[in-house]
Length: 283
Image 1 (cartoon, helix red, strand yellow):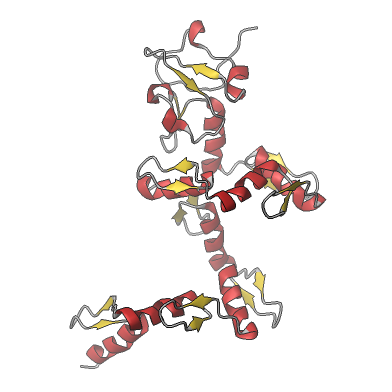
Image 2: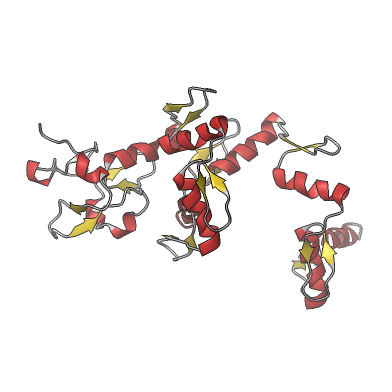
């Protein structure tokens, strides 16, 4: 039986039979893939959608009709388009939660089973799937295998690289369906939507106060615990909040980053600038 290209909407003319690549070869990592271009170069195929910077750009024949991004394989394009459509075809048969990728579903199901068979041989931390273990190990090794194709910055996780690259491209594929505001990161969009819903999912387990963001709740808990994890390495003073440490360090450095646009006077803190501007308003 003739193998079909695992892609649709090929740009240009329809590829001939001798340029078709079997789906089986594409899904076998490590096999060499002959690309249907004039150069006849061979490349090692990697199932990671985002390793396309190692592939001859003439082979990226499958184009997203929404944002224009190109892919070598239709399957990669299909997964990508779910960012725009919101399609989530993979459902958890335990709780019904839906996911856009099969790997996300597999990771999620471990929440229900609680099974963690894999252990880090460095610190002993347990994980349910090998992907999570491999990501964790990069904390110890400082491995950063994903590189921004625009500036070269390295990342330990693919998602971090993708979000960063959108700073260069300006791509903001996630849209709030309430106000229309767009975001480069899905998590940021979900946090934004809490402004509309009033949801405050993070609760202080000491006093019960609810918060919009986890970081706000953690900052608040230090009022109860007295914890001061931020340390000035100049004078040794400790602080409960990172912003307090940042403001304090300016005492040592003399930095005054806040400027009055009326008289050009400078201040170490934004609050001081705000108070100062009231002087001009009353003149």
